[in-house]
Length: 267
Image (tube, rainbow, N blue to C red; front, side, top):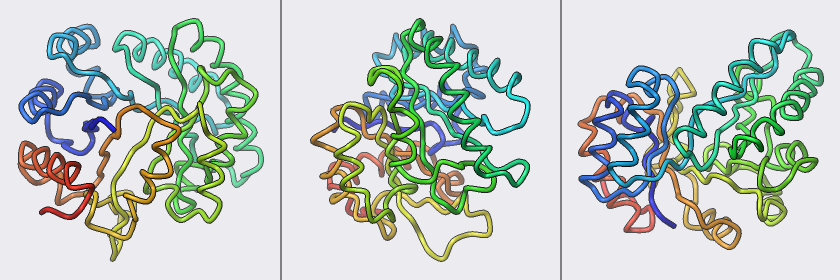
């Protein structure tokens, strides 16, 4: 699989610096985030990426559908779809949202309702919506969709070229039903993201991602499951305070080495 560097892995880098790092280290694709893109300027970012010859493997993020009043969320997601179209992103990642009112069943229903509203808009814009199931530890605050199977159930009513899923190693590696669900996901895997599960976990569990090869996930095994059903970019997405504090050019070089070594630890 071709390598992509998610902008979150080098969080301190501006859009221009992130693009430059990818070009200098031979990384052909970048995963962008909406906030730094807005700061740099949407049209300016689109031109910069195109002139650099990079692909945009994903735009993060849409979603957060679980509030009782969805009007604001739907408006923001339509804007995100427009941004993904302008950037020619391979997909818009949807983070479902957490439990805002202790009603887990209702929150999951609101995710389904929102996807149903947004799917036609995304299809008209030529944008693919990628639902990201999240590790159960994030169910309360970020992701009421906890398994790949649940995400596929949400995607199933819609065309396979419009609504699909993200396979993020951190979020799915623990699932005993994962091999069967990845097979089921054939044609709907829009993004494959890798990092590692490290222990001990930090106080902020969100930052418990390590560089590939530094933790407990068998990434060669997982990639072997995904590869028959996915030909896009493999995107390295790491939220980690130590990684963020490091020189981002060195981080990018390390990511390239680890990818070439099949995710063996090279640090």
